[in-house]
Length: 123
Image 1 (tube, rainbow, N blue to C red):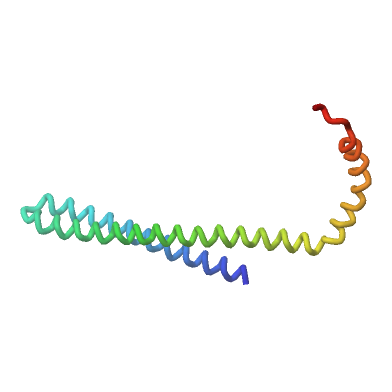
Image 2 (tube, helix red, strand yellow; image 1 turned 90 degrees about the vertical axis):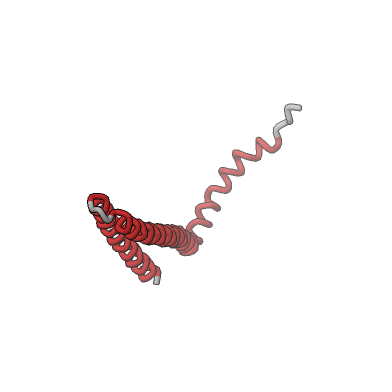
């Protein structure tokens, strides 16, 4: 299941990238329209139309940016959750070995810490 989610998220990032690429192409085209309108005598209507197109493209880019941010956040959450699951699975599958290791180390730890507990305080 986690692999499917990552595949879906990857597909979303590709869609967002395509949207950004198309918007950049449109913005480049609008810039050409503005330049053309400034050269012609009918500059004012052409500039207004180009400006409206530019505003629409800017909104698309902002939407794409928000979408990409949401996808990135989802990826970060999935990666974090996957790491937590892996750690949990590791700890639970090796629980008995970890307990045995701790029990083996307990006597030496006690031998080292007990003298510290009984030492006179330096008050």
